[in-house]
View 1 (cartoon, rainbow, N blue to C red):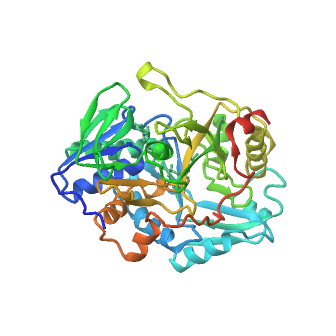
View 2: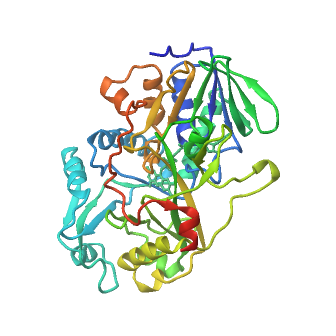
Length: 425
Ligand SMILES: Cc1cc2nc3c(=O)[nH]c(=O)nc-3n(C[C@H](O)[C@H](O)[C@H](O)COP(=O)(O)OP(=O)(O)OC[C@H]3O[C@@H](n4cnc5c(N)ncnc54)[C@H](O)[C@@H]3O)c2cc1C
C-alpha cells in the first residue's frame, strides 16, 4: 500500500475541474498545506466537463452506494451551495414495459425515503405536469422524483475554486505536457509544461477528466467519450409556460432535458449515451481518446457548433417532441456542444495510486454522473488517498486488476462510435 503524502508535501493537482477542485478543498480541510492546482486556464474551463449552465442532481441510481452519496451531497447543495441549486424535480420515464434502470432506481429512492409520484402512462404524467400538447409522452411510464434538481455547474465550480484559493491553494494556468519520472519510474519527480518550463513536486494527483489517459496510461481503465448537447432559445411566453417543469429523462433513449434556464431562457437537451471516441496520439506514443485540442496559450477558444451528429440530433428532436411539443422540437439550436465524459468500464469513480508509482494518485472517472457530488467527491478521493474509507469503497473506487466491463443501464441511444464517423453519417 503506497504511503500517503506528508501534510507539508508539495502536492500538484493536475486539472481544475470538479474532481481536482473538490479534492483540493478536502485536502485543505484535512490539513495539507502546500497544494498547487494546474489547468490550461482558470476554472470554470470552457471545454472541460465541470462547466455548463446545468447538471442533474438526482439520487435515482440503480446502485445504492451512489444513491446514498447523493443524499449526503444533496444536503450540501441545499445549504452551503444553495445559490447554485435549483430543486425542480426529475421526471424519469421509459417506454412502458421496458423499465430498464428505473425499477432499481425507484427501489433505492423509496428505500431512502425520498418522495416520488408514479405514473402508469405518459398522458397521466403529462396531465399532472400540465403539459399542453396532445400526445405528450405517449407509450411511456415512470415517476417524478421530487427531491432532485439541477446545479448551475459553472458557477458552483467557480465558487468552490474560490474557496480553495481563499484557503491557501495556489493556481497556475499552464498546460502539462507530461509527468517527469525518476530513473526507475517508481516516482514522479516533476511536471513538464508545454511552454518548456518544469516544476518539481513531491506528490501528484491527476484529475484531468477526459484528458487523464493521455497523461497517465490507465490501460483501458478510462475512456473519453463525447456526448451531444443542444441549446434552444425560448420566447418569454414559452418560458412562462414551461418554467415550472421538472427535468425529464428517458432512460431508454438516453434523452434528457432541463426546464428553461432562468437567466437565458435556454432549454438544454442532451443524450446520456455510449458516446463518441476521438483517438489521438499521446505524448508516450499510445493512441488515446481525448477531446479535440484547444490551445488556450494561442488564444484559441472551443469551437462553436450549431449542429450535432445525425444520430444525436434525431434523438434530441424525438425527446423534445415528447416533452415540449412540435414547435420547440423543430427549432434550430442556438448553440450545440460535444462534451466529454471520462468513462470507466463499471462507471465507478477511480481514486487510487497508479500501481508501481508511489506518489502518483489518479482522481477521475466521472462517467457522466460525477457532477452532483461536487460538494463531497473530494472527501471520497482523500479517503482513498489516505486509505481511510471502508474496504468496500476502496475496492469500488480502486485500480482494478481485471477490467471487467459492466453495462451502465442508465444509458441509451446508439452504440459507441468514433466522432469522425458520427459527424460523417
Ligand atoms: C454533457 C455532460 C453532461 C453531464 N451531465 C451530468 C449530470 O447531469 N449530472 C452529473 O452529476 N454529472 C454530469 N456529468 C458528469 C460531470 O460533469 C463530470 O463527471 C465532471 O464534471 C468531471 O469532472 P472532472 O474534474 O473529472 O473533469 P473536467 O471538469 O473536465 O476537469 C478536468 C480538467 O483537467 C484539465 N486538463 C486536462 N489536461 C490538462 C493538462 N495537460 N494540463 C493542464 N490541465 C489539464 C482540463 O482543462 C479540465 O479543466 C456530465 C458530463 C457531460 C460531459
